[in-house]
Image (cartoon, rainbow, N blue to C red; front, side, top):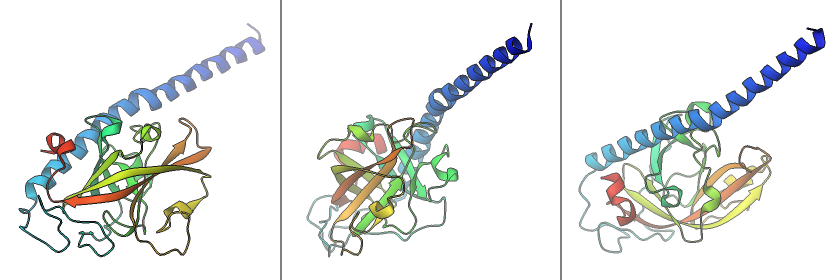
Length: 241
């Protein structure tokens, strides 16, 4: 066999191996991590629920029923302090992504969080925390490593996103999308893309790559806090308890 023939076969073999690796990374490995990340979030959510104190009969800013609180700028919504890197902050539930879909949000957006079998979603350091006035911003992969935010583009106006912390459950409602360049960090501002503006809303910003399997741009999803409750919202009660 000629040198060119051997070289051609080697290149063909290398190409097949590359394709197999891509398939393994984005399909099989992602499927495995999806199950692990989902299981870890389920375990943490149930642990927090079991350890939570009974809901107070009344509290500042309460609007009645199951410890539910209003969400005006001056409402007494609990806001935790920012933890150390890779520490758990919350469990996020998005029914639009699947009836059993959930993930742990950990501090930081490095590989130790986004690629972790016990996380999948990372909190941008120095942005707000759940329930805070301003911008609680998180990131996750769209494909690979669990394909956590693969279905962000399926969100529809008013869809609920639930965020559970040790304090309780924050209910956000999806508002709108934005497509930006990867370098556009202004989406992390307290008022997204409005540098210097005074925040009044309590926003959840979810960022991921777009389109799937590419990193050409970023898909940004914005949701606004509707309510806080010390008990699980009905839509996810069976999934948490």
